[in-house]
Image (cartoon, rainbow, N blue to C red; front, side):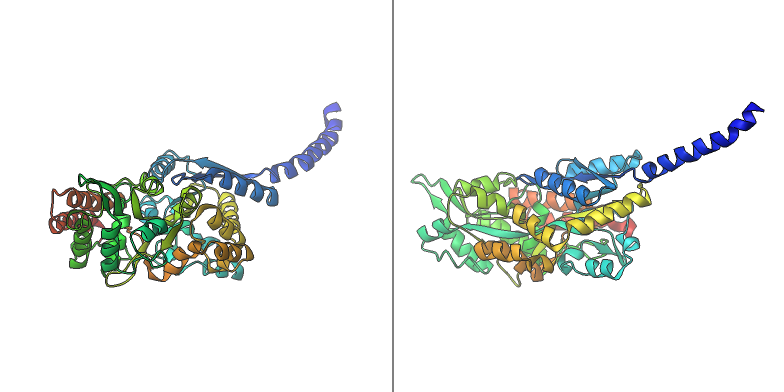
Length: 431
């Protein structure tokens, strides 16, 4: 009897508890683990932490959790391990060239399912087409451009003046590049080189730097479906021959393997007058070069050209719909014109949407520092970076061939034919 009299009170207490608890549960923030590769010099982590804090202030229901995962290569390895162990992030910045690998691993979902409103559709259509080449396949959008780049040429204007070259007229084609590099290469009385004319890194990302030469010579390295490579095309072999000639024939480029990481340092120390590297090094060069420098589009052979590079946002399958919606909201927020512009200014990466270049802050920046616009102006000549199924091994076949030719153990023709044979073997299952 006593128990029955207590039931209405118990019901009221439970109802009151539910009324208090449910909003609290509803308001529990959606956590978005977010892998971020720190691969280029500069205060990138501070910028990303700042973005996360600002986004959370505007979106109190979402908790962003940046996890700094090392280089791009370390990041993809960590992400794939996390996917297999059921602990995948919600989103991550990984190389645009990782797209086929992530699709083949069934690790990611396309963004298209989240693009619902006219505003979302306009946003998706607003990125530079050159960056979308490595972001879409099979009619779906798998990556959203963010930390993107092209290769540009940095050159020391003071050394140009010393060599009798016009500091405001960088080489426009391979003939001019060779001639300038010859004038800029200095030797001491014993014949030892004290200053190289040109340096193109052949470690770290040799395939990427080489792809620029191949595009300039009239051929890209792969098809858009990621199922074929063209390493043994005459234009590609010719591009490698030119790189080898800069070393062996013209003697204006260091022998052996040129390190990716130390090339900017060599430039700062005036050991080299011209270097090819990512536009992502722009802020690094601006802050550390103690001399007047120029930034130029890469010179042409049959045409101008550079591969795009850098990282895209991806959405991972092993996340909840609420996490994916929250991540999508952040991706749209961080790629807004104002933030894309500020990101480009702070890092040197290319702002990924034309609207970013129309913002007052970017217009002012370019007016005061015109080199910032070179990578953008090169985008009409840019092509998708080398990306295929089984990408890491297909790319390794090319890298091995490039290094064999540069070290002199194979001719450019033999090196590229061997690389193509290996790529064909690896890609056969995907055709």
